[in-house]
Image 1 (cartoon, rainbow, N blue to C red):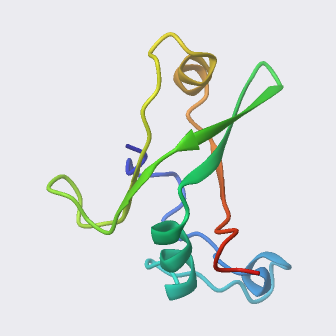
Image 2 (cartoon, rainbow, N blue to C red):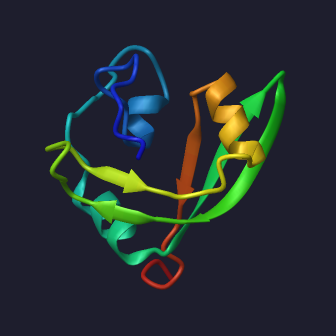
Length: 106
């Protein structure tokens, strides 16, 4: 799972928080529309990178609002340990996820 602590304690979760450095808004919880998207969507794009070469994979995932291992939300993905995405994550644990619920957001 990707619930390991990151170097950022709080992450901007909206356009207003990301557009400038003056008035960043941060939160420790996910907005309801993000939770709804994570609950409704079935796939995400996982972007990894190593040696400045990006790699994007379409992944099936499971979203858990909490788990026995974490009170924070968790996104679980599985893959072959020998896959390119796995070797990329071992070399560079910074990843990006893109989730879109194509059904609810017409």
